[in-house]
Image (cartoon, rainbow, N blue to C red; front, side, top):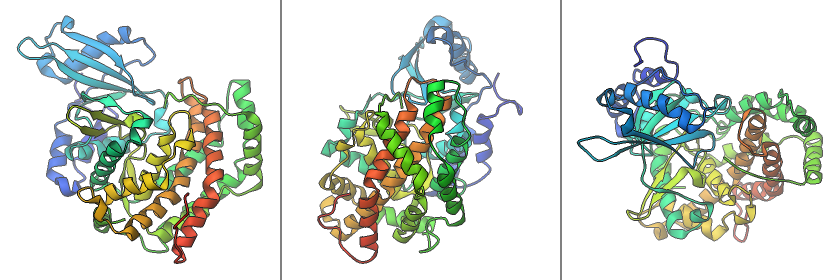
Length: 449
């Protein structure tokens, strides 16, 4: 079943990327070599099956992708489920080779309907370049509804780990390096486009469950849609002149979800009235982003604890799972990470304070000598980050509405929408005022968004 014609949908996207050039610092040839060497299969795995019933198909997949195992007896394969996936099912495959040690693989199976919130074409085009730059697990093979990667011997971080000063510095250093990777394709920031696409889907949903439908129907999208149209006409960065890709790289180097949540519905009703009576103010946020002239980088966009792994013995940190990766704003990626300190319970009391943020930002700007970073550079990145803090809440709030309709995961996604939007409303005035004061030449000393 190895790919030979046009039957394969997902894997051919990566093959096509080999003809598009690109590659940046890691070298276009290197990335193209990675692309051309990835084996592909037309096999599809039924994700609704229990893992034991998936095992025969998984073994067939491994034999199809890796010819050295094509005649290996099935008894040499074992398959088990591993934790850490939110939108995907993650499986660990162990292969006992007669003449060598055990070989470990990770099989990522895409969750049902995840293509509604994840641009798989964009993900697959980027992965070879990310892999060539040394990030994440090595991409070993592709199939119709997933991929096979190397197995990382490390533990998944918890939200509390991210606030550890040593680990925080490691994350900052790795993120800085990640932001220097160049990926083939458009370098235009996708943040506002993605929010717009999510909103277009979110406003036409229908729910079979009566309770979900009643909660959803109280949300008014009229003003939200109005602001989305404004975004399409006025992209951030145009007023002040967005930096070129080369300038972004220099700026990065020298400057500056099984989630269970609950919300009392009287609070949700209050937020809903706010949606009805006021604009969903993305335009003001987008205008501020333009004035801040935030560098555009290839961003992870989902740097929660579940997408960070660490081998404590080797003291090596890994960024993993790049399915939401795209060109976006540097400050957004950092702010989104800070928002994830709240953990699965959305406890925003855990959002890092100014001192903890400055520690992270100094290590991002200059990992080798963070204490030598100019205070003005740290302040500038602090303002940039906390302005985009708001965009992160809006992105995942609207995302959760779509997930509430299509995801099979046992999680209150509608409740999550209101939690994220409530936090957005709570932080909006302070964060926007902080940005305006900075742009007008003031100082943020004593302020804490």
